[in-house]
Amino acid sequence: MFRSTWIYTLLMLLAASFLGFTAPLVDYLYNKGFTIMDLTNAQYGFAVIILWLMILPVIKRVKFPQGKDWLFIIGTGITSAWAIFFYFKSITLLPVSLSIVLLFQVTWMVTLLDVIVKRVLPSPQKWIGIAFILGGTVLAVGLFQTKLPNLSLLAIGYGLLAALCFAISLYLPEYMSNESSPIVRAALTLTIGAFSLFPMYPPTYLTSGVLWNGLFGWGIITGLVGQALPLLFMLVSIPRIGGRMAGILSAVELPITVISAYFLLGETISWLRWVGVILILLGICFSEISKSSSNKNTVRNRKA
Image 1 (cartoon, rainbow, N blue to C red):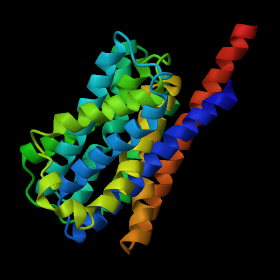
Image 2: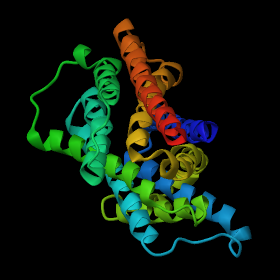
Image 3: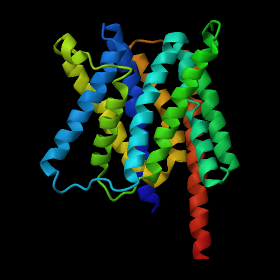
Image 4: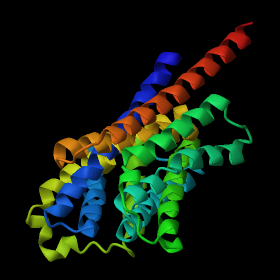
């Protein structure tokens, strides 16, 4: 039982790590002249194509979602896409470091959603782990080293809306049944997400010519590591570990982003930011260890 739980935990960590690597990769491509709109659309477009190409040869054997699962798939697809949109809106109005801090409020937002839905308070250790993660986030993005401009409520609102949408997209998969194939759920979720982005991000990359000027290859890479694999891993793991734990484990995305930016973009990382990275990892470990301990105690009590 515990071995299988760790497997699903590892899948969630891998999903967050892929997302963490994608952020500086997109930044790198943006500096090369691609627009955020084209990069986002290409991510979704190629991810959808990759997943459906994997499904088509075995489409008669895979199981499609039934009943309420469709509601959770639609909700996950729309909220994950809107999280990206609101996050990029916040970046245009705020320093990137502050936008990231606002996005990572997802840690306590998922926990709050879980408390509202299940009416069960998390353990003190869990709250301590969340505090470590949030404190580490502020340090890891170098917020104290950034000169903040006059902040508007609209800009902060965009950042918090991104976090809320991300939190919902992490929480809803917990309620999907395991009867349908995860790869089908991932393909449907991304397809819905791609269509929900069209009003804000029209897929002009299909007609502008940018697709054949470098975006094709990068679209495949970012679609695979930025959308297809992370979502597939999340849809396999979250129904097993729960949305609350998924929200905490997703915090590993930021340390991976910081480290990837160091190697990919050549960003300097101060000792204060390294302290933040360590605090985030400690917070994740603290929360996960407390969960494992409580699970073991529950099993022992049942046996007794």
